[in-house]
Length: 404
Image 1 (cartoon, rainbow, N blue to C red):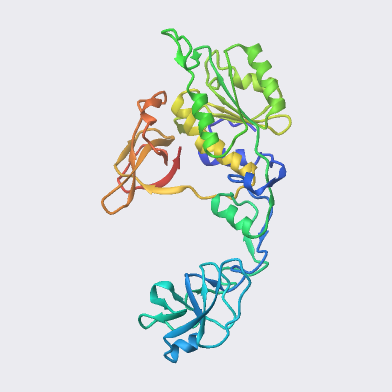
Image 2 (cartoon, one colour):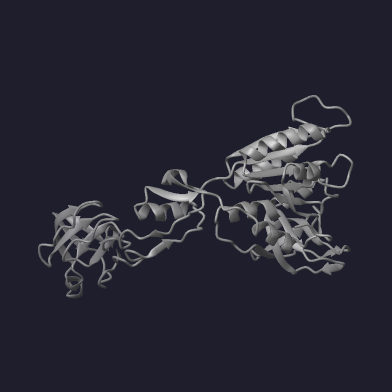
């Protein structure tokens, strides 16, 4: 679908997500799944904890003995974590236990090691102790019951979720396959870092920023290519990448200039344009289309600030959507200073997140010197999305923030 007028950011996002192809599922060893998106439900293998669990090093005793005033207990045995539960011999005995051990049979109170001394094989209480039943005991099933849903499909697997899956006995889990992503920068003026450079050329930096952003978010199958402003070579290279990658992220060549060849070449290759232009600043010329085999093709403007903003605002959420990751609402923060914007476009404004003396975070505006001023992004944390102007947004205006 082509639009005669630019899409709004919300409509552009909806148009992208409605046309994505869901990525396939693969089964991986749990240790390889950090950063992956879960594609099956994970249920509790057992109660959690699976037994009454000792939470302090000390002695296990019968709480009724403590309430009767007993202060000296014969140490009957020692029981460590991972050992079967021993049975208390009588009410005047105690069993030494370690943190994580199963509560011994006949006991229901753990006296911490700091509250007694051992003399001639007996534990003598130093001071009055808590005599409540199940003191310092993590009761069986207190955290969850066998068969309960622990992780729904669509969960992003971070360290805590990996631990939960391991506790459920999942040696392997079904997750979304990672997309193969090709990052393509276009332009005769671009020169690699470290290569000789002429006065009229610029360093190739956008591709490095795009790849770094993807890898930081766990996408590891990221390729890189640089194609000059030559229609035949561009067609040849993009045709190859479309056969080997699910996602193409292009930087440059999507505006209105004579050498902005990307949209026409993609159309020649059978990529269906969904939209071209979004009513935003920076990044208005952004292009998006779907390839013949369902490939997602993002044509990002070549100015560095525009490239990074469009990548964070549209490409990263789209890849998460294609992997089946549950959507998370954008972070919301208040502006730390007033901002005036004169144009009837959505405004993406770089910010640094600072905290005041009460610990409250503020989005402090750090406007660049145009969309080519990528130097100003160093030290910023992301950008906020401000509604179309003209308007002045006061300090304290709350809006969405997107981190680099």
